[in-house]
Amino acid sequence: MAQIDRLQELLQIFYTRRYPINLNDLLNLVEYSPATLKRYIKKLREMGAPVRYDFNAQGYVLDKTDDDAFQFPGLWFNVSELHSLLAINELIDQLDPGLLKLELMPLRKLIEKRLNYRGIKTGELGRRIQLTGVGIRLCCPLAFRASASALLERKHLKLRYHSRGRDEVGIRKVSPQRLIYYRSNWYLAVYCHTRRALRTLALERMSEVVLQESSCLEVDELELREHFNTSFGIFSGRPVQEAALVFSRESARWVAEEQWHPDQRAQWLPDGGYELRIPYSDERELVMEILRYGPDVQVAGPWQLRRAVRERLELALQHYKKNKEK
Figure 1 (cartoon, rainbow, N blue to C red):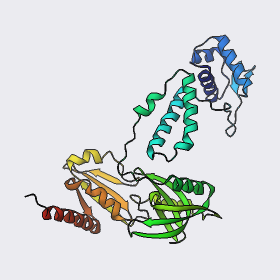
Figure 2 (figure 1 turned 45 degrees about the vertical axis):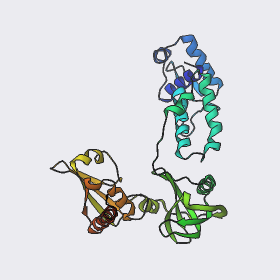
Figure 3 (figure 1 turned 90 degrees about the vertical axis):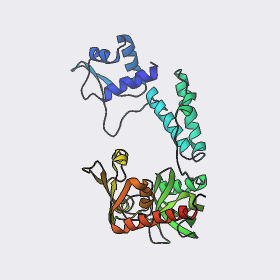
Figure 4 (figure 1 turned 180 degrees about the horizontal axis):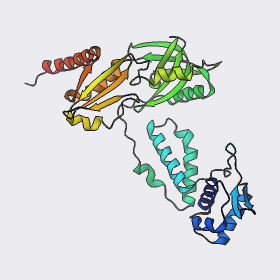
């Protein structure tokens, strides 16, 4: 074990102890010689860790407060933490190729240097970790950076937005509230001053994104949660309906292990089927999700959702009737 890791291990022991720990107990935990242990305690003190010897209790203790925890200077991580950081870096790099690569590359090189110093090869990690996305729509890195900057600096954004549903392009002034990564794509939750309402904008539909000097409108956190978190899918809004979906016994084994919504309700049925109830506001994405299961799901209610699914299935069937194989 490298010296850095032993120092981290020793410091963690002190952090988990409320009372002084004597030398013998410490030796049993770290499993190295008394001379080495005393040398590492001295090293911690030299680095600024408030380790002291309590003569009354005849043990070592770390003077600490909840809001003033000692940290090693510079980038000091143990091997497990460095591996985790490098894995996270690899995953982020795959989320959207090129989106954060320039910003993350210096950190990645520093982590690899630290691991190589410990004799650990890192070249395998990128090959062994794979993130597979379906339906990824690449957004412009400039739009992402401007959105993230406005979000953190609490500034307005002015942008051109192409509404996919209405196929219209318009200028929007928005107050960013949240950046959302949902189903392999990026969205910006905003208060739209043009529409005077909360909206969810797809980053790949944004262009000419300009960070403004004016401070953005702050929306109450409770209102944000109610709007963006209470209904199924990315089409947000307060739920107005509850979908009742009945899955066949064959598909139930998969659906029962999925979470469609934090507030979903579910139950097993006597025939081995599975009933799932989901709150929703906008039916568009929910209809698409239901269609994925084809004959293995039936909409029990409400009737508006049942009709919408039936209409989509009938339209699909018409295509096949028109193009019968000869």
